[in-house]
Amino acid sequence: MDLPSFLWLWRIAAWAMGLSLVAYVLLAIMGMRMFRARSLRQREPGWLRFLHYKIGICLVSLVLLLLLIGIVGTYGHFGSLGHSQHLWAGLTTVMLVLLSAGSATQIRVGHPWARRIHIGANVAIFFAFAWVSFTGWSVVQKYLP
Image (spheres, rainbow, N blue to C red):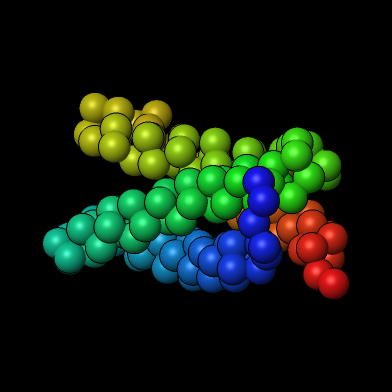
C-alpha cells in the first residue's frame, strides 16, 4: 500500500486496545457479581446480564477491529505478515474472545459445560491480553521514528 503514514492507524489501534482492556475488566467485575449472586442463590438484577452481553459484543468488535488493523497495517508497511510473535498473540486473543462469546450464547440450565468453557476462556484471555500487550510494545517500537 502506498499510504503516506500509518500513524493514524496505530492511534486507532491504541484506543481500541485500551477500550478492550477496559471492557474486559468491566466484564470480569460483572461476571464475578453474577457468579456471587448465583452462589448465594440470589436473583441478579436484570440489567446486569443485559449490560454484560452488550459490553461483550463491544469487546468482540474491538478485538476484530484490532485484528483488521494489525493485518492491514503490517501488510501495508512490510508487505507480508508474521514479523513477530505479536501475530500469534493476537490470533490467540481473537480465538479466545470468540470462544468466550460463543460459549456465552450457550449458557443455560441444560448446558453446564458452556459456563465452564466461558469462564476458562476468560481466564485465558487475561494471559492472552498480557502476551499481546507485551509483544505489541515491541511492534510499536518498529513504527516509531
